[in-house]
Amino acid sequence: MDKISVIIPCYNEEESLPMFYQETVKELNKIDNVSYELLFIDDGSSDCTIQILKSLSMKDKDCHYHSFSRNFGKEAAMFAGLQKVTGDYCVIMDADLQHPPTLLADMYHALKVEKYDCCAGKRLDRRGEGALRNFLSRTFYKLIRSLSNMDMNDGSGDFRMMTRQVVDAILEMKEYNRYMKGIFSFVGFDTKWVTFNNADRVAGETKWNLKSLFAYAFEGIISFSTKPLKLAGIIGILLLFIAGFLGVVMIAQLLMQNGIKDFLILLEIILVLSSLQMIFISILGQYLSKDYLENKKRPIYIIKESDQNHA
Ligand code: UDP
Ligand code: MG
Image 1 (cartoon, rainbow, N blue to C red):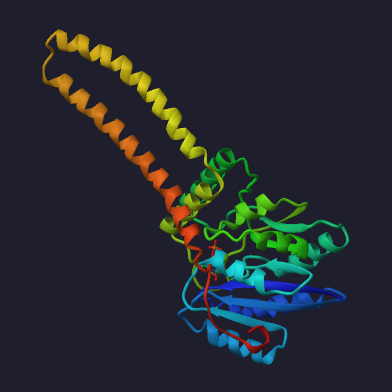
Image 2 (cartoon, rainbow, N blue to C red; image 1 turned 120 degrees about the vertical axis):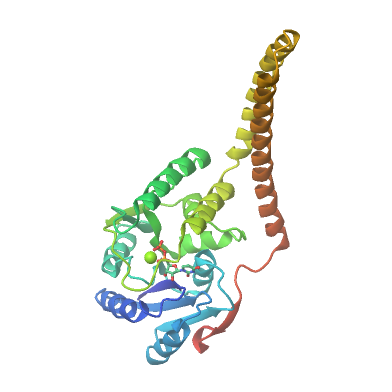
């Protein structure tokens, strides 16, 4: 009998969890001939998430949890989950029911019968998200596709079921700076896409704000592309040509004794150029700092407590 492991990263999800549990178990029970486990990763929640997980694990032998010592982020929680689960098939789901459990049976069918390695959910629309976030997300995916040569889909979240082989391949990637969408794309394998409509969160609030989304987008680009570094070189060379041309113009103007206005233009050019330099030094710094953190080999997460079965 196959075993399906469901990994659920949870950060302050006390309101969503009871409903998530009910719906997901209902759908899992509809699949014939499988056993399952639900592994909740409490990512340092400050609400009653841990209490709910404790009581779930006590009343249901198929429910387990690990609780982090602090908030390490969803990437870390997903990694921990993938490391700990034992199923033949693993699926990662959000706790807020934005990933419909009704798709689980189809996903399992795609892997078991249609012999795909992976079956991933793709949101059809971005209903329920602000216009600005919508626009920024689309722009980001366009940018990352052109920068990284990776097929990262707009609308593809982390909702996907994978075979054990795919999970093991992902676990081989032990990098500290984790960007799961890039990792999924990097490991390859045959993926079937199933679409679903974007549902609103059942309860609670999204954990993302504009600042954290920008940081995440930047992380994605830096982790999977070195093109920004090359871009710096290309822009540098272009600027050098322009500078050469301007130099000639400037000397000619100075010779004609043209006053203060020209000085201001000169200053403007210097400012623009030095700001560009600063930006690219900062990009370089970002790459170096990633390497610095990788080299420290810090743990990706720290577990504070977990239920007995999974200790
Ligand atoms: N999450 C997490 N750690 C975090 C932020 C989020 O484990 O630091 C979990 C969260 O509990 C949820 C999932 O990741 O189960 C998706 O988060 P959210 O719904 O806030 O993201 P959105 O759906 O708005 O992209
Ligand atoms: Mg959500």
